[in-house]
Length: 396
Ligand code: PLP
Image (cartoon, rainbow, N blue to C red):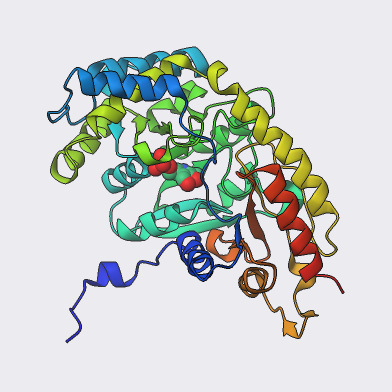
């Protein structure tokens, strides 16, 4: 007999980014040369100075349960980072370290949203925001953007989306999947709307902060009047190529931080001790030490922009952050390639996997079904090969 699962889990979707990666892995296992442009993971190794810090933590026997909210020296390093990079003042008791920023986002949504409350999700949104909202009993309310406005919401759209039931907005800059980065002026304009609605909180996911080609970065919590309602999320996965180490963090009002610590005390007992110590080295080293990775992403960005522009039917903008392109491919819907009719982005994504052996992610997963996401966190050689195959598969 099939085990009987809860309604909560039945309503949850498996991440489509993972579903596509699994299908790509199956093809690879059959010996087929699949190029994966579907995962949000740097292809670089974690830098040596961070690995050394982890080894030292092991030599110093950091083997016991760490504090629920994270080691004090790590939380101090986070306070220092937020001051140094973002000019944000936080006390150490406003910081909670978690098992990846994904858990920080989940914790924050869990402590803020009551069942039936609405959660605004500027679309395209990162897939997990939608599912986390459902898991905590919230009602996802996408705010649709398009490539024409660089996938950014306007203050008018935000104002129109807020209702008496709105509790939270989950915001992301630089954005996965669009690569858009909001300027300080754009955030301030959204902040003006939020000032009028004191019941609305914002999770500001800034995990791609360093992978940003605009020359500057504005953090939502810089808007002093609403800072107490902003939960700043960041982590080391993307910038420091530390996806497997699983360390993320939040900075928030002490009441919110304490509530998140309560959840964590019952669920995980805090992040891995060795990874926490390694994270101190990462944060203290700052952006300068990993600039070579950002430069590498930028070179690939320039390359992929040219390659994508060259594919008929793809409407492309130049992303200014993260490591994704999110072209509008709707012009191809209704067309037939090699006997396969493409009706939507999901079918196009599947067609490119089967025909070009290139794994992508359908925009449907991010709330923009007219788009397709390509991750460029792979070598230039692989990128050239992948886009040559895509172009061939879509030749008229
Ligand atoms: N936020 C965004 C927008 C992401 O793309 C990701 C990872 O793909 C995360 C958060 C999660 O990162 P972490 O590894 O810190 O859990």
